[in-house]
Structures are given as C-alpha cells and as structure tokens.
Image 1: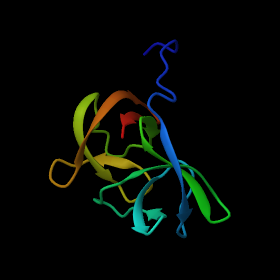
Image 2 (image 1 turned 135 degrees about the vertical axis):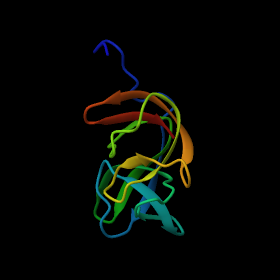
Image 3 (image 1 turned 45 degrees about the vertical axis):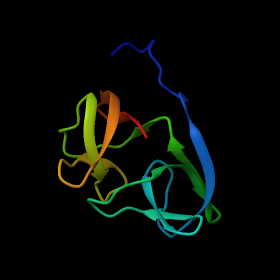
Image 4 (image 1 turned 30 degrees about the vertical axis):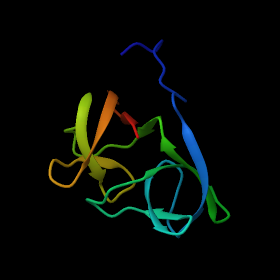
Length: 114
C-alpha cells in the first residue's frame, strides 16, 4: 500500500467519557454505565476506540476511520463482521460480530470505519 494514501481523521467523531479501570489508549471499548466506558471482553461488541485515557477520562472515537489492533489474521479489506478480541483489539467474528468496513489491513492493525 502506498505511503501517500492516508485515512487519518476522515469522519472522526470523538467524545469525552469517564474511563473504567483498565482503559488504555488504542484499545476498543464498550459503554459500561452512564457516560462511562471500559475494556471489552472477547466476543463483545465495541462502541469505539480510546484515543487517550488518563486521570479517569478518555477521548473515545465513536465514528469515522480509525486504526485498531487485529488478532487472528483473518481480517481483510471489505465489509466484515468484527467483535472485540479481549486484548484491546478486534477479531473476525461471523456469529456475534457487527459489520464494519475495513479499508486497509497492515501488519500492525487495520483501518476500520466505526
């Protein structure tokens, strides 16, 4: 893939949430209470990606294109069902996953439309 192509910031929608214990920047998260996000367990649906997390709050990307860690090696470009992998990233999940558009797969993750 050409390094001249960039998907950063396209359609980005970010909101501030309180962060439950264990939330770190770069991981997928789920809503755990009013205005609060926490880490996802394997197979869970995710609501977004933590762009930052410190002092109990985080910037959570809820929409647009974002790079996420991928496990399992089965993710490819196109429409694919994804769920949380339990380690902060995503995995292909044809049974319980939610369909997302993957626009690029790289060795260290994939660019996904939330």
